[in-house]
Length: 116
Image (tube, rainbow, N blue to C red; front, side):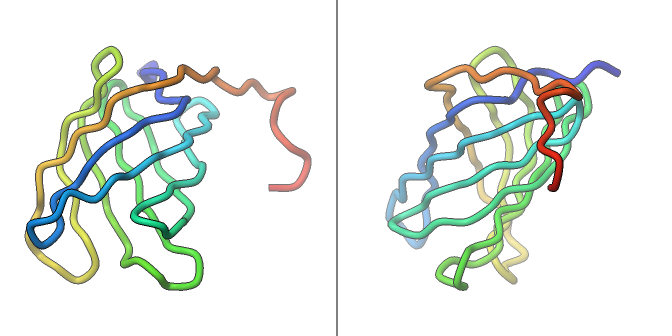
């Protein structure tokens, strides 16, 4: 199955304890694999995940433990991702969506860094 193109810069807001927190994701994509960085409310972290067709799944792990682990899943259609997120040990899933603000490119084998 050919993965949708998720590479690029995405922006989102997630309701956490009644407050809308801005998130920004810089996503790199190598076929079905995605990784990159994220910023949320002044903290930063790394993302790792997979694309299966239009389905996207990725986890956000914070650098320095400043934010809890996030698990995102959703559907990518055009320049919008719509889905859910689980934060930390919370068993509740929250609605989540993101909007593409700058399109990236699919990395090819020759683009892959030597040591990853």
